[in-house]
Image (cartoon, rainbow, N blue to C red; front, side, top):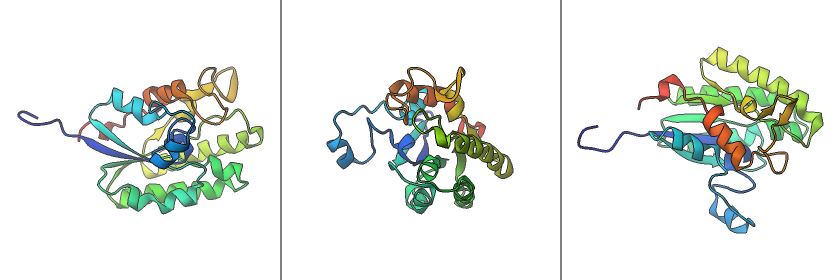
Length: 205
């Protein structure tokens, strides 16, 4: 804007450890103090904001949380925000919970965000190298997320596609993870640059 600062679109990123940036980052300073090493680039939002400087991201990821716990934090997390990215579900599967119930929770979060007049997007579950037993659940949930996105008229962010190994479907592509559960810095870069596909309605504030 002439004579003033560019307007910013404030985006709340709400999710689990994939949003938080574990194991190299966490939005909670007390968690970072206990970490052996930290790197703020271990957040997909870091790379998305570099690519889209009119966005301001707020990291509201919490490690190990299931979708029901993420949902409980939504209203507080979006205070003052214009847009919301919802991510979660893998911990439900790891903890033996049903993917269908997790999808219900994610759908309810989309509806809540829309009721609060936010611009809402929902993210795919990412690949996994360590828990082979949950790979069918991840695939099933990603199909369910695609259906939710279509039904609610919200963008589905292709986080899984950004990280999936074409030669080993369901697994991380080489160089994108250090622990098999989370993206590393290069993985987050791919998610921020390729997985976060800027929704049309988010291109202007």
